[in-house]
Length: 389
Ligand SMILES: Cc1ncc(COP(=O)(O)O)c(C=O)c1O
Image (cartoon, rainbow, N blue to C red; front, side):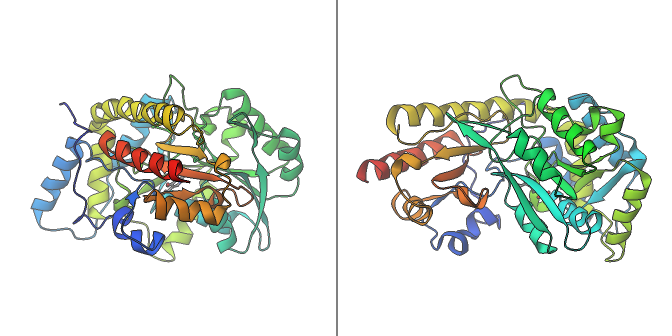
């Protein structure tokens, strides 16, 4: 089947946070929303067909998760990433953010500390602070648009923390970790006895011939120290269904996690997430294979456009995710002024760079997962606004 990602889908009746929360987030509805990480594309037809059939049944009572659910997820990980997962160590979770939150609470002491590499997905800060744990930042070092780990700082910070939250692939920098870097990080965590939570939600959205390496595949010793969060919600644009998977290193940690959620009776998929995830991981590949080149062309479009018409804004095609990191420092605006400029002048709803790295000035994040025509309109608006500055 051929998928047409150029089709502009009207999401006005879709209860999409990306659209319906514009007023709350930006103070106006008059912005093209290129912020929260979901896509403006319809998902794979096998998922739509499976959900339609489920809806037609007309009964959506308490749902039992069949063996085939985790088998479908494990099969996908094996096929796409070469990771053979022991299904007895998999748990369902509402989302990867909920997984992170629970791990911070359950696997660090009261008043403990969590290491994050910034800039990073802002929930890494929020879920740590939600439990009164201390955020310890290891900022990436930037040189000519290339961001890398400051190894001395990383090791020094590891000696102060209880848990390391790794983002692999990385949001918002689009880094697909090379084996050498990943191994070095993990070996340092072992050396300093720091448990790792590896957020791999973006692992299927990888470009430029890069390969995602699941952290837990590096060695048995490393696998024994890693809890991994995976999901089909980014890959297949299903975030509203709220389902993800956790892979534990041992039965004890899984039991601690499962007990916590059972205490709130949150341990079942809803009827639709159950159906959608299984359909995605068994029948969604054809759609994904068409989506990836479309997204990659979107990145190239934005990069070329900025080079030609908005050279004051520097960006690059990310190796993973569909999120682009815009370096707007040459505009000479502080964070508040840049925020206001994007909304009021460019009429774009982007994410502020300083929400991912609190010390940063002058960056924005742009979600490029929309039809090319929408992106073209957004870039034209941005160009006109920068020209008028
Ligand atoms: C790195 C990362 N982790 C987690 C999430 C959200 O995960 P979930 O919706 O499963 O809670 C996102 C969404 O943007 C993300 O970028």
